[in-house]
Length: 370
Ligand SMILES: Cc1cc2nc3c(=O)[nH]c(=O)nc-3n(C[C@H](O)[C@H](O)[C@H](O)COP(=O)(O)OP(=O)(O)OC[C@H]3O[C@@H](n4cnc5c(N)ncnc54)[C@H](O)[C@@H]3O)c2cc1C
Image (cartoon, rainbow, N blue to C red; front, side):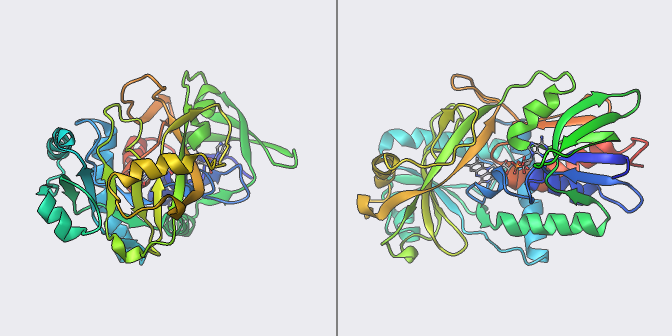
């Protein structure tokens, strides 16, 4: 491998979206991935929801990039036959005390420039979704679902067409700052080592993005926050047509155990939020079943506990610790030519094309990229 103009660390949806956006013939771009293939990290363990941008504080990167990313994602998906569906979502108040919560979200959505949300009565909820229980709801018609893997395939194809190169089984283990570039040391699973220099480094390493940033003097600490899912079986899939969410708790840790539908119509509950130690543990305990059942039953009255069983899990890379308030994405050039993307949790999938456009703007003007 020769020296690089730009090195992207991490081949998840963020690294691949960036590669697709910035690659151009004549520029040496390497995407380094520690695993044998791309898209096996956070990007393969999520709800695959194209978020509306309702929850995030006004002025935050999460709000702006979610809205911009959503528009772009629908365009990309429609133009390139990436499986997706704009199925809409309801955030339901199951008791009158929760009405205040959905009114707040409605105002917040408007402050974020999301003007399509609508507060709807119990009657309209019953018309849209006759099988759920709600005394009112916030309807988000712009929310949808997408195949994350097909999206990543598309980004990778675009990047490769423009001569970016994906290098699998290559873990970045050390980085040294040099006068005008960075020396990158890598190791394969077999222990083979390799080093090269790169003018620009883009750190999109997901759950390890703090470790990478800290290799060159950063001071980040990610908290791992696990989200378990349970699947629903033995229920007629056509009973629910939209994503159904409860009113979330106020600290933005998660959105509350909700009902998601994948592109094959399969129903799932989750994800919940549990801070864990720094291990990639994806097991879902049987004990989660009664907890998910009792949360979901508030808005899915037809549900029986025997319909619910443990399914998959994902891990959020959170800058927000267990007792902290909201924390935004960090997308920052911390050293000249070294861009860190840290804490890219939800709505990272939705925001991915907008994040890529932002990185392109940050790079414009750099000698290696012009
Ligand atoms: C439970 C859950 C549900 C979610 N639901 C949604 C949703 O519905 N909608 C939405 O918009 N967002 C959602 N998200 C967020 C979204 O999934 C993430 O923001 C996005 O996938 C992050 O992508 P990434 O590329 O940053 O990380 P990853 O996909 O993890 O990619 C990072 C890559 O870096 C590699 N890597 C790490 N360290 C190194 C190293 N030292 N050297 C080389 N490679 C390395 C990893 O192997 C990995 O492949 C959810 C997240 C979770 C956890």
